[in-house]
Length: 102
Image (cartoon, rainbow, N blue to C red; front, side, top):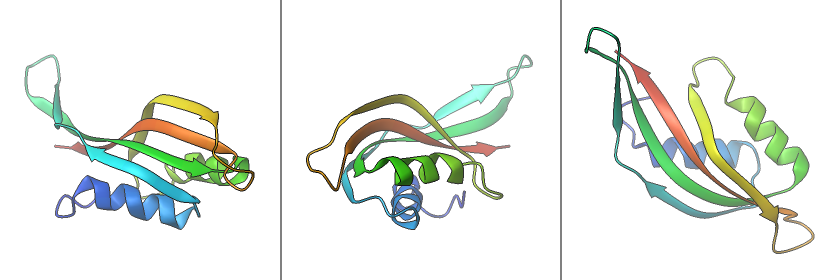
């Protein structure tokens, strides 16, 4: 994750890299600092709420890509429902966070 770029740009690139059919919405959320037992910030989470259309193969590739070297993203609050068309079989809603360690 490159702190100089907004998280939503990184998420859009991730979606395009994995041939997501349509990025429906992307909404930046407030950053969250996570502290260790000593009270010092260990990492900061930069979440965005996303909704996109995909097929099964592209969704699987997207989940796999978050584990690639130099990418530290976390999916949570994932909801997958039936998509709007045969080509876009799934509508995915999730919070995708970039984690930046101190």
